[in-house]
Image (cartoon, rainbow, N blue to C red; front, side, top):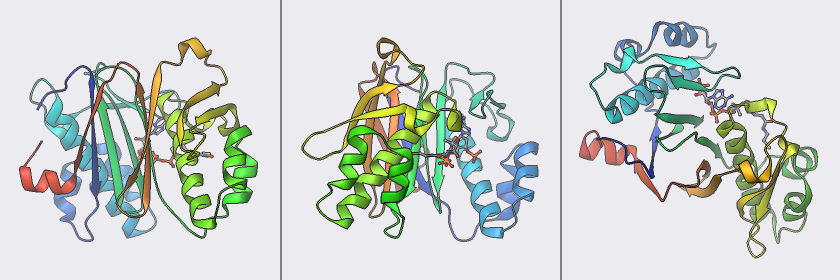
Length: 243
Ligand SMILES: CC(C)(COP(=O)(O)OP(=O)(O)OC[C@H]1O[C@@H](n2cnc3c(N)ncnc32)[C@H](O)[C@@H]1OP(=O)(O)O)[C@@H](O)C(=O)NCCC(=O)NCCS
């Protein structure tokens, strides 16, 4: 499968409870094996290995030439965002939360992706007061009930993180320096009012926020010229082979 110029391919996939450890390790680079070995808990080591092996398999599946997934050179940028050394035109971003991960790939320009499991116990008012601005805070304060407040919070939070990730700055871009534009009826984030350090005219991105399964939210920031998002789950992958 190749990549269409005006399309993003987005996969979500789960880490299974049990995997063949040797197979996973064989699908990683030396650096990833070293990093996996440093996790304190087995569950974290296992998920990290599975997510990175799957990311490599998916990236290799869309490249124009045949490359062994474990031999792809992933190079971290200045603030940690990985790129493909030998395929700089292929932009991608990975995100994971508990046993679920997502990967977005496109050739139109950088992408940023964030996934979070919705946690009904999360202290959303306090965190919103610290990290949200303007209409974002109002959306939390004036939510009709706690469940809607929590949903709104995770939509806004993931949208901000997806912005932090599309720029490659990660945590070096302050959450408060991003002001999202919200739909006045639903308070759902639809775009950007202001991103400090990025003049409005240079912000040529779209934002898409979607629910994933029953309890997760995914935000994707991607180049404005992209006209479609092709979405696949791990069920599609296992039923249809490599898509
Ligand atoms: C990069 C960052 C944004 C990732 O946050 P995260 O939600 O913990 O992690 P995600 O699962 O979404 O993404 C991790 C992946 O992003 C990629 N990544 C790493 N650095 C990145 C960067 N600077 N930019 C984009 N992507 C990056 C890597 O592939 C990483 O995968 P790995 O850890 O398995 O190697 C990080 O800087 C961070 O910790 N942010 C949280 C800070 C915060 O205060 N957020 C408040 C929002 S309101």
